[in-house]
Length: 356
Image (cartoon, rainbow, N blue to C red):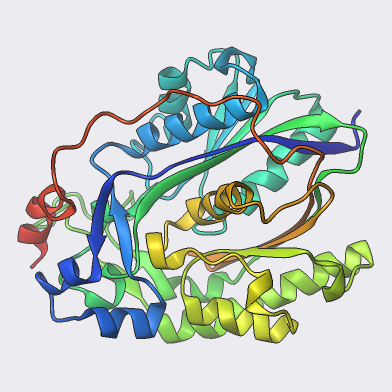
């Protein structure tokens, strides 16, 4: 069995409709200054298509970067907490749309930690179960179920997808170590009520979801939890903070990221930060940030990349990637989303009307 699972392809898909903080201020009592000072977010994307469409385009772009086609994929994992359908999985929709007919498929829901969880699972399945071409996608369409009367949560989230391809390798590369956890005692700090079989189907306004979001509790546990997982991963590898070339954290809040960097005694110049452009896209934040770091030339062959995330559950996770030899794609995909002729506010108009 191979010792490693190298990342050989990468791609992202961000929907074209942009919702700025000034747009937000037209539908709720807020302002650009209020949002940016608390979160670091300036704008976010709003999808006009299902999450599986975002995932499929990101996946096809990642496959092109690896020099592969959809039929090559034998394992497809979609990390998401905003599925197209509960039955079947979003991964099944993605398989159909991509044409990945030879893949075993499943969804993994670990909230915003979903990509690290999925990367760990795919790496283990390549190393232990003989899979050869794994596609891991983090995708979300969170704006679909936001309650636009709840300012503290509505301003934070956006839609998007990012993907990576993993292939077996005997050379040290890919995810070298990871550690995952969850603080289920605090699960009420971030929960979407009435979205599942625990909800009441027959309650008035079924389908209008409330996001319970305790920002203070999440902030406290996020920094502490991610730091704990990072220490565990570095200890397992006998690494120190000085061995890290680049940190790619979950993009939930700029202040959380800054606090984590301070805790690790790492300068922000060594941290990937793109939350200002997209907001919190949950399981998609880390793969999207990874793709953009590659596009910007911030990742070199052999670099050690530290991933860290926390999310609903409250899940947490960290991983250390040793980057392989190639930092440029082998090819470009022509995969695109269907055209969008609406603004973000127009896409969300019905949801805004029903939740205000």
